[in-house]
Image (cartoon, helix red, strand yellow):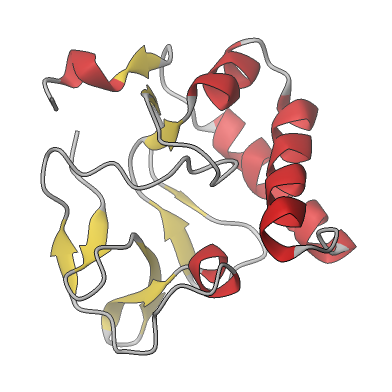
Length: 152
């Protein structure tokens, strides 16, 4: 498994987009909404093996599991794409493993409201649901603990 791309300046995960120049990396919308200091140009580097970030689903917990996935074009995101495995916290991994995607979306919505103090906008809820459905179509095997990857 390849490590995610992070920003060398702030140590946060970056989203990847394609354009006429190739791949462009940008800070994530969730980090911007969380008020993290991302007022700089991203400097993309491969994350160190022990880098963890946060759960790719709820963004509220430290990930402990990998959801193996093939690369795919992300829906509702012009020129966006997802590469490789996704990281999940214990709760999100349990919900995904039991095919409870609505509960994963609800968990993401609850963490958004905790961070922002307002409910997640309807358009964002629809986009997350669409993204997670696309991911579900591209899962390539069972969810596994991160430790089994030799990352600790």
